[in-house]
Image (tube, rainbow, N blue to C red; front, top):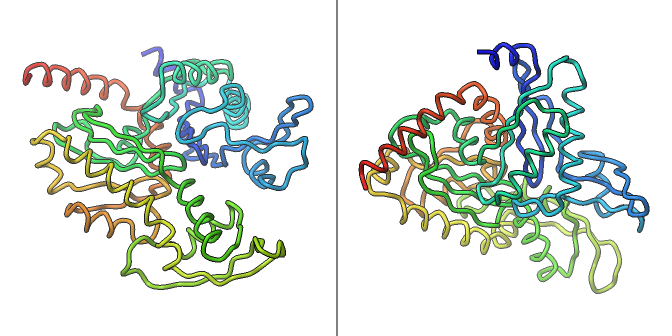
Length: 349
């Protein structure tokens, strides 16, 4: 009861700590921050010069003594110190001491995070001024944010295609029954596009150009409407700037291998799913969340490959952060569901 009273007066918040972006949800206000997970550092003295959008603009354009880095790579923390400083920056930017009470914070983390990484994330938030810190795995947060009936004794299959990893989870009774992760996601799609045009056009392009092409004309399904656009880069033969016209077919070909790996891990998860939960999936199907869910034709591709219904969640990029916020409100209910699931598993062994 005391916690509820304190929560009423504090800016409790949920944080989606993603490889590509950080999103922050504040109770009663909704999503208040969405910025890239990028930090610009002065190598001479270690000082942070910029965080978020301002730092992303510096990628590939900084002088020798300034480095723009992503402290989270492939869904895991690659640089603990920089990640901590980034978390503190975003929390303080949102909290801004508007409340006298320190906030409770729920932070989403990849399901593959180690205990050391979980502890580092919690300690970073505590040092930034949090009253209490909870961590929740991204697939569970995404399922809650997508308003799936996670408390029910029935299977829900979530495919979360983020920036650094794709996580596939079967959820029932408030817990993850099965989870698989693959380090192929949005950033890898961009790199595949870059490599494709190096080989096909002798053209080198930047990450931002590849991402723009993926968003504007990208598709992984052959039946999608054809589009085209111009991209600019550097000719690898002459070394001079060059402009070429690319098509939807180019993007589909470039993403062929990453899509095969993605389908493989989804099929492996389906193969490992208990029979009773598999039966539920025939009707409930697959829920796509994360930025990768917006890639053209991906729902149709998965539908053909799995013969299951495939649904893209409403606002798929917001599902995880919305789930962290709802987790604060549903925390006790979820804990009861997890205890019921444990009893159910023991009874049916």
